[in-house]
Image (cartoon, rainbow, N blue to C red):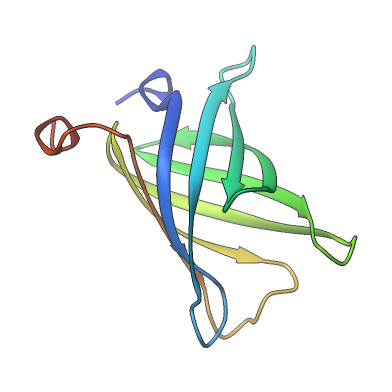
Length: 119
């Protein structure tokens, strides 16, 4: 798999970095900059935007991200995805000020039929 294979939009299902592991849904859009580094934009729910930059090697995608919280503070973290194939990403993430006893989790999949997802 190449970094170009990851370009596009994925549906996401995730769980927050806390004891309750609250679930969320959204989208993740991946593009490339001029140096073939990943640019990421998450949309969580209807309106929370998060942005990030990262890199890809050996089917592992690492993205440093940030977003502005409802309290006006900027939050930062890192997300790591195992790229099962170009249509399925399985990941975990952690924020700097999140609960250190837990990791967030996230699964990403392209909006394709089940046979295409398994290719």
